[in-house]
Image (cartoon, rainbow, N blue to C red; front, side, top):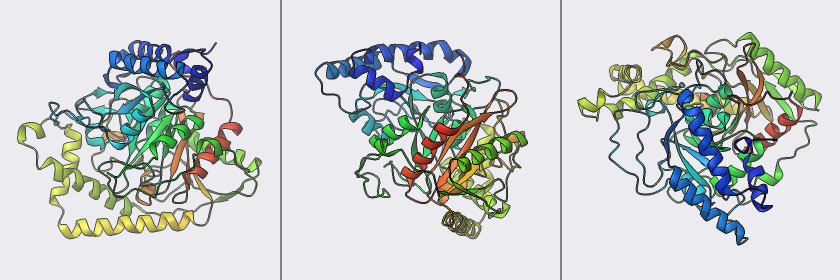
Length: 463
């Protein structure tokens, strides 16, 4: 029998409607799972147990009366530290934050889920300012991978990835500006979608930054996205509302779909042989299902990634230089030293870096226009040590392992990560599926197809 904490969102909601399970039981099971796993994982920031149980009881009453707010009413959800929720501080993963400041209102994604009747279990961890693809934080400590606690979760939605894999609840919200929902999804063996920029309203909006669903299944992600994509006037970069739901439209005929297989983007770390083999196996499975597969040549180079690095450094340095010295001292030293390296750059260098980001955007979209979808590794390497900030703790190349994800934030394209296998020592491997701009539904459809044709997954960790 499947444990309650291992049931997906769609399964829970169906059980609620049949009166086989209640939101209170599901919430209690998720809270018990958090208590059991937290000493090993450190994935949660805040757990609001009593408030969550109150929300679950309210949801239970709505089901008794036959008036649930949405298909996700009563389903437990965790929310990343930096997604504002009313009544809690938002420390952004860093000791430099003033945690006496309490949010007065929900951010747009949190507001949509509260309207949907979801049960808010609490907040999940992240690294300082979200500026590491790692689970290391000066505020939260080290978040660990449920598949092997000695290994990293990646980031920056580190706690969200670990929480979903460990069964803290079937739904999680993360944010992604360079891969931050897809990277932990890959190393934690779950599914995550980076929507097209503006598909999910956020506040404040920023170049490349999105909120995305993190779940165990594509179906659950589509249900979550259907709530998140509802309009909110606070996002002045939002796309026009998409009125049709995605969740009922996930079936797709694969025959004739043109897929580009990209195993070398032109920069970053080389792809580990085990990961390459898993991605090639996934591509062959698509081809056997009727898709047309073609190789993609490298189309970026290291200079464009150096520009991205400078842009991110300068963006954070501008924030850090406004902090009083005692708070600046609280920033994780690796992040602080990396960001303040941008102080030596001139405004002209910054302008040139921004121009190169638009060149990166142009090339990504040009390549995508030749195919229906691209297939890539989500990460080129397996998880490194939990305590490491990046590969080899290299301050000059902290993003060498996000070479396949970050470009598609700049190009605003939808992209997901889905588990496609395991390393020899049992760690998950992520396949990234990238679509053309605005084709969020198509990316979900191709991921749903892959769920059907991939090899069976291993049991979830920490059982």
